[in-house]
Amino acid sequence: KEAARKGLRIVPDEELLTELTFMVEDPRVLVGSFDAAFLELPAEVVVTAMRAHQRYIALTDRKGALSPHFITFTDGPVRGPRDVVVGNERVLRARLADARFYWQDDLKRGIDALADELDRIVFIEGLGTVGEKWRRMLEVAREVNGRLDNRARVADELLARAARLSKADLASTMIRDGKEFTALQGVIGARYADACGEAPAVAAAIREHYQPRAAGDPLPGSAAGRVLALADRVDTLTGCFLAGFKPSGSQDPYALRRSGNGLVRLAAEMPGVRLDGIIELAAARYAATLTREEVDARWEGKRAGAELVDFVRGRVEAFLKDNGVPYDVAAAVLAVSWTEPGVALARARAISGLRGNRTFERLVTGVKRVANILPKDRRRVGSAWAVVRGGFGDDGARSFDPALFQDDAETALLQAVRDGLGRIEAAEAKGEIAGVLKSLSLLADPIDHYFDRVLVNAPDPALRESRVAFLAAIYSLFGRYADFQAIVEEGPAA
Image (cartoon, rainbow, N blue to C red):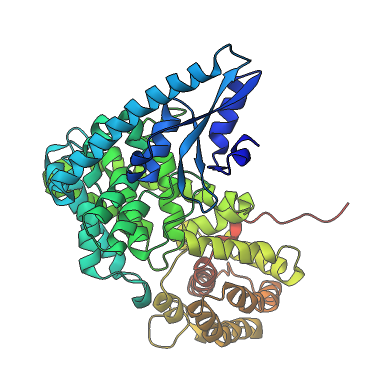
């Protein structure tokens, strides 16, 4: 109401309003102002200067432009409210004067000069400088970029420029000396890039590569921002695990869980990018900072590689559950596709959507019967299409012998699989996982019929081995999409 009386609007900030609510019992509104010349600073700097220490509420005019006014409070009435306002204005003036000094000093040096200083700033003790970090980021980003669809790829010149300048603001006076402005990393870098005449796409990538900063934050809006954001996170995670800074219990000083969650959300929107591949690539890039022997010793000897894979897989599991995937379906798809979170989520949703479908549930039962009769080392999951297809062909790759079939149920199941392979592969190529599961469900009857008629563990060793190999080939087809053994079937109704 007080803002409206002045013809102004408050800058939305629920966190600040909540904090203020719990700080005062009898709030009385005071409106102060500052020199409009300070509005030459980026709006984020002015708002942060007001908010960080003084907890002032920023105001805008009706067009959304920042106003040279602020709102503060006293707890209960005071004798001299004007004196309180003057005191607050004096404090804010000093903070804004400092911010203007930082801004002008940094612009005198220019963003390229700031980027050059990154070679003197340590990233993590023993793991090189921030300058080496952005170079590693660029190598990983180029690899990620190359795996994207042609329409989603970023021009290499843009990627290289954005990577070089992405951390430049860490060398700025604003971030280094203005303690209240450290949360503006990326934002300030983008502002400096704009002021120094960089392309808007470069400035956008600098700003966005810190996104998402928290669970509810949006992902970067530009392709360059997304690629750099992913490269930044995988480099930080790899470096921290190499240095032994893995999270434990409630201890996570480097916010690696948050970084891991962001990595998974980014990868889920980037088809073709596999988390295991970029983790290995990031580890290899550290060889430029450490010796190859040091990387190998830390990665393998200290199990940093296995620990990071387990950590990221755990973040993918959390991602699935946050998206409403039941625990058993999450376990089923994680066994096969944790490295591609978007694929895992699509498969999990398709499988969950078939809960209650009698044909599909019979299929799950059939697949479990196949698994139960196979030795553990014959239950292959995640097989390449060429391997699955070859397992049923006539080109010598097949491991079972149809000449040993003795029952029509065996021939019928083989023919049903061969008939379905083309439909299944075509549906997968289109990303239609529901179509894949529908085609797989057509095998429920032939599998049931097979087990009704065929003794798999036949007395004759050659016949037994052929039948086991046949079932192993069938299991590899299903195992390409999920570990159906993990799915919990509902029991009969009471």
